[in-house]
Figure 1 (cartoon, rainbow, N blue to C red):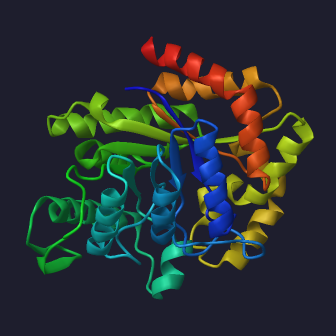
Figure 2: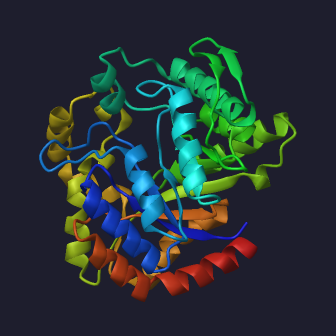
Amino acid sequence: MAIRIGYKASAEQFGPRELLDFSVEAERTGLDVVAVSDHFQPWRHQGGHAPNALVWLGALAQATERVTIGTSVLTPTLRYHPSIVAQAFGTLGALAPGRVFLGVGTGESLNETPATGGEFPGAKERRRRLAEGVKLIEQLWREERVDFEGEYYETRRATIYDKPENPVPIFIAASGPLAAKLAGRRGDGFISTSGKDPDLYRNLMANLAEGAEKVDRDPNEIRKMIEIKVSYDRAYDDAFESCKIWSALGLSHEQKAGIDDPIEMERVADENADKAHNRFIVSSNPDEVIEAIMPYVELGFEDLVLHAPGNDQKRFLDQFAADVLPALREEAGKRAAS
């Protein structure tokens, strides 16, 4: 599959109009994909944002002409019912045929608990909900009238009236083996994030392939997307300092688990601000950035979605497009072909 290079629209960091302008700029600079986060609450209370991704994607569909657009990621199982997600992405697919994907995951308490007031389920239940939710979404896109009775969701004579001729591809995010196997069984694509132990990615790819092969699917036909956290600036100190606003990403799973209040998340993240840069490729050297990205290409990722942490996103896009993007495309194409 051809390499695509994309832009992560960080809805936790920017308001809807500003984020739309950055995403239009990303298309102008030659990027291929815009993937937006879907948060009900941001990682930080002070200065944080959380525009509704479904509404925002409709605006993006009309403001752009070429880029593929979608969520990385949305949880279609708790604060959203799967049938509402099917309706929303059917509409998006009709507005921008062939340019939409639905990226889904099992969710975080930060987004689900405040919106519903309900207890955040454990990992096993969240995976089961995701599998059932994806099944229902696909059935609603495929069939005219859907009576569905699952473990968690029901529909009665449900019809999605507006949808594209070809169903919107569903990308399933995974950070563990069971979710990766689910992506292999059911996903048109798979989503991961950068900056973790390389062995994790090798294991995820192996589990993805195992899941696909168990249902007689070719894992090579599943697109692999990775959000690559990269802070590039011609001034190294600016690249380094830009990471601090995203210090929550440097927290361990144990440090973040169970925190559903952005004020508390901000407090814990700020206590660990010195670790913020650990998840990012931080550099002022274009060749260094390219070499740091290549291991993900060699692992088999075809969609490289760039998550830049700084507040001046236009500066990042302009500098990256001028200094890094042409050589990155060339080198990534060579490595993928080999």
